[in-house]
Length: 227
Image (cartoon, rainbow, N blue to C red; front, side, top):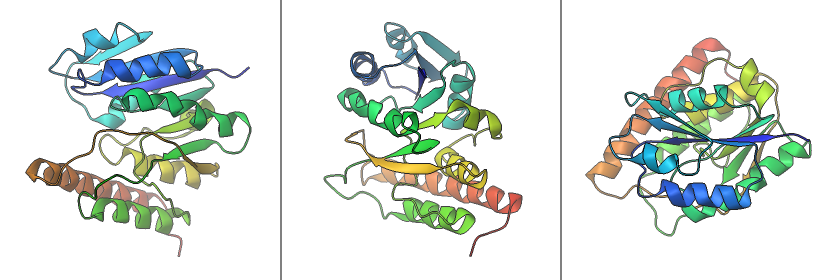
């Protein structure tokens, strides 16, 4: 029977991560639960240690991509599931990401989250990511920025290092598709913290937009565009 490893990257998630890990423990069959504390300044690591099989502490904030890379390379499962630390109780639905891989339907599954109650931002980062992925691979994703995924270990092992920051999801999707693997988007009832329409929210989305632009630029240099 194939085993599942769950990797949770976390940065200053002391207020959310315990609820997320409890839901994972209770509802998702898995071999191991790994948390990568990406240089948090709060007590994320101490809280995560209560439920995780392994907590890896990075000395400084390195970015989500580095955290994910660090975590999955320490894992042992045949399938690696990537879940954000702020999913809280909705993390219990993570098993739906593993099912299509276990059934042989795809090599990487991506969660499509429900539409948010209120609109935030202008959708520029998401639109850029969707268009870039389509032009580079021919695949038009519904949720190009979704960080909730499951992927076969051998697929991850065959790829280059993950992008370091906010471009990690876009880069991973492009790399997996270009390598000839199958990707399937799955509706999952995940909920997580949203950025607001304030200066912090726009700053975050601005950084995300820049990171996605850089990632797509690198991927464009690595191969041909698909028209």
